Image 1 (cartoon, rainbow, N blue to C red):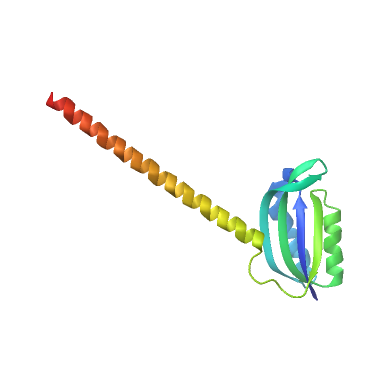
Image 2 (tube, rainbow, N blue to C red):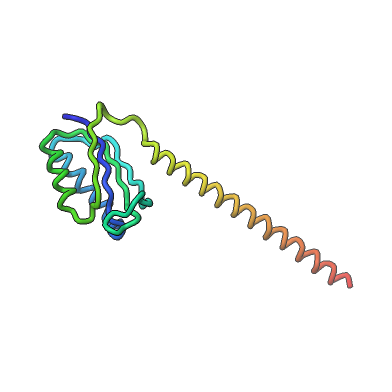
Length: 145
Protein backbone atom coordinates (compact mmCIF):
# COMPACT_ATOMS: atom_id res chain seq x y z
CA UNK A 1 0.00 0.00 0.00
CA UNK A 2 1.09 3.53 -0.75
CA UNK A 3 0.63 6.82 1.03
CA UNK A 4 -1.31 9.68 -0.55
CA UNK A 5 -2.32 13.21 0.32
CA UNK A 6 -5.84 14.04 -0.83
CA UNK A 7 -7.31 17.53 -0.96
CA UNK A 8 -10.83 18.11 -2.21
CA UNK A 9 -12.91 21.25 -2.53
CA UNK A 10 -16.64 21.16 -1.90
CA UNK A 11 -19.12 23.67 -3.32
CA UNK A 12 -19.89 26.25 -0.59
CA UNK A 13 -23.64 25.60 -0.82
CA UNK A 14 -22.94 21.99 0.21
CA UNK A 15 -20.74 22.80 3.24
CA UNK A 16 -23.22 21.23 5.64
CA UNK A 17 -22.75 17.88 3.86
CA UNK A 18 -18.96 17.80 4.35
CA UNK A 19 -18.91 15.70 7.58
CA UNK A 20 -21.06 13.03 5.90
CA UNK A 21 -18.84 13.08 2.82
CA UNK A 22 -15.72 12.62 4.94
CA UNK A 23 -17.34 9.66 6.72
CA UNK A 24 -18.27 8.04 3.39
CA UNK A 25 -14.77 8.47 1.99
CA UNK A 26 -13.21 7.11 5.20
CA UNK A 27 -15.52 4.09 5.06
CA UNK A 28 -14.56 3.49 1.42
CA UNK A 29 -10.86 3.61 2.34
CA UNK A 30 -11.28 1.29 5.33
CA UNK A 31 -13.36 -1.19 3.30
CA UNK A 32 -10.45 -1.41 0.88
CA UNK A 33 -8.08 -2.25 3.73
CA UNK A 34 -6.58 1.24 3.87
CA UNK A 35 -6.06 3.71 6.67
CA UNK A 36 -6.65 7.41 7.21
CA UNK A 37 -3.61 8.89 8.97
CA UNK A 38 -4.77 12.49 9.13
CA UNK A 39 -7.89 14.43 8.20
CA UNK A 40 -8.33 18.16 8.48
CA UNK A 41 -11.42 20.18 7.70
CA UNK A 42 -10.03 23.60 6.75
CA UNK A 43 -13.47 25.11 6.34
CA UNK A 44 -14.62 27.65 3.79
CA UNK A 45 -11.81 29.58 2.13
CA UNK A 46 -11.37 32.04 -0.71
CA UNK A 47 -10.32 30.54 -4.07
CA UNK A 48 -7.46 32.06 -6.06
CA UNK A 49 -9.69 32.12 -9.15
CA UNK A 50 -13.32 31.32 -9.99
CA UNK A 51 -14.27 27.67 -10.39
CA UNK A 52 -17.74 27.09 -11.84
CA UNK A 53 -18.60 30.75 -11.05
CA UNK A 54 -17.81 30.16 -7.36
CA UNK A 55 -15.27 32.25 -5.44
CA UNK A 56 -15.20 30.23 -2.20
CA UNK A 57 -15.02 26.51 -1.42
CA UNK A 58 -14.92 24.19 1.58
CA UNK A 59 -11.46 22.57 1.81
CA UNK A 60 -10.72 19.10 3.23
CA UNK A 61 -7.31 17.42 3.55
CA UNK A 62 -6.81 13.69 4.14
CA UNK A 63 -3.59 11.69 4.34
CA UNK A 64 -4.35 8.09 3.51
CA UNK A 65 -2.67 4.74 2.92
CA UNK A 66 -4.47 2.65 0.27
CA UNK A 67 -3.94 0.21 -2.57
CA UNK A 68 -4.36 1.19 -6.22
CA UNK A 69 -7.87 -0.27 -6.56
CA UNK A 70 -9.22 1.67 -3.58
CA UNK A 71 -7.56 4.83 -4.89
CA UNK A 72 -9.41 4.42 -8.20
CA UNK A 73 -12.69 3.97 -6.30
CA UNK A 74 -11.99 7.17 -4.36
CA UNK A 75 -11.22 9.06 -7.59
CA UNK A 76 -14.52 7.83 -9.07
CA UNK A 77 -16.38 8.89 -5.92
CA UNK A 78 -14.96 12.40 -6.35
CA UNK A 79 -15.71 12.45 -10.07
CA UNK A 80 -19.37 11.47 -9.68
CA UNK A 81 -20.10 13.71 -6.70
CA UNK A 82 -21.39 17.04 -8.03
CA UNK A 83 -20.61 18.79 -4.74
CA UNK A 84 -16.85 18.16 -5.18
CA UNK A 85 -15.67 20.92 -7.51
CA UNK A 86 -11.94 19.99 -7.47
CA UNK A 87 -9.71 17.27 -6.04
CA UNK A 88 -6.00 16.60 -5.93
CA UNK A 89 -4.29 13.32 -5.04
CA UNK A 90 -0.52 13.34 -4.52
CA UNK A 91 1.69 10.33 -3.80
CA UNK A 92 3.74 10.63 -0.59
CA UNK A 93 6.81 8.75 0.65
CA UNK A 94 5.36 8.02 4.07
CA UNK A 95 2.70 8.92 6.62
CA UNK A 96 2.41 12.57 7.70
CA UNK A 97 4.00 13.90 10.84
CA UNK A 98 1.91 16.35 12.85
CA UNK A 99 -0.60 18.81 11.45
CA UNK A 100 -0.33 20.68 8.17
CA UNK A 101 0.94 24.27 8.10
CA UNK A 102 -2.43 25.60 7.02
CA UNK A 103 -4.20 23.84 9.89
CA UNK A 104 -1.59 25.09 12.39
CA UNK A 105 -2.03 28.62 11.05
CA UNK A 106 -5.80 28.35 11.43
CA UNK A 107 -5.45 27.12 15.03
CA UNK A 108 -3.15 30.06 15.86
CA UNK A 109 -5.64 32.48 14.34
CA UNK A 110 -8.49 30.95 16.35
CA UNK A 111 -6.40 31.27 19.52
CA UNK A 112 -5.73 34.96 18.75
CA UNK A 113 -9.46 35.51 18.23
CA UNK A 114 -10.21 33.90 21.61
CA UNK A 115 -7.62 36.10 23.32
CA UNK A 116 -9.10 39.22 21.68
CA UNK A 117 -12.58 38.27 22.88
CA UNK A 118 -11.28 37.71 26.42
CA UNK A 119 -9.59 41.13 26.42
CA UNK A 120 -12.77 42.79 25.13
CA UNK A 121 -14.78 41.10 27.86
CA UNK A 122 -12.32 42.23 30.52
CA UNK A 123 -12.31 45.80 29.18
CA UNK A 124 -16.11 45.91 29.14
CA UNK A 125 -16.25 44.56 32.69
CA UNK A 126 -13.72 47.20 33.79
CA UNK A 127 -15.73 49.96 32.11
CA UNK A 128 -18.93 48.70 33.70
CA UNK A 129 -17.36 48.62 37.17
CA UNK A 130 -15.98 52.16 36.64
CA UNK A 131 -19.45 53.30 35.59
CA UNK A 132 -20.98 51.74 38.71
CA UNK A 133 -18.40 53.46 40.93
CA UNK A 134 -19.07 56.89 39.37
CA UNK A 135 -22.84 56.35 39.73
CA UNK A 136 -22.36 55.62 43.42
CA UNK A 137 -20.29 58.80 43.85
CA UNK A 138 -23.05 60.87 42.21
CA UNK A 139 -25.67 59.31 44.52
CA UNK A 140 -23.52 60.03 47.60
CA UNK A 141 -23.07 63.67 46.49
CA UNK A 142 -26.84 64.05 45.98
CA UNK A 143 -27.52 62.62 49.45
CA UNK A 144 -25.22 65.22 51.05
CA UNK A 145 -27.12 68.11 49.53
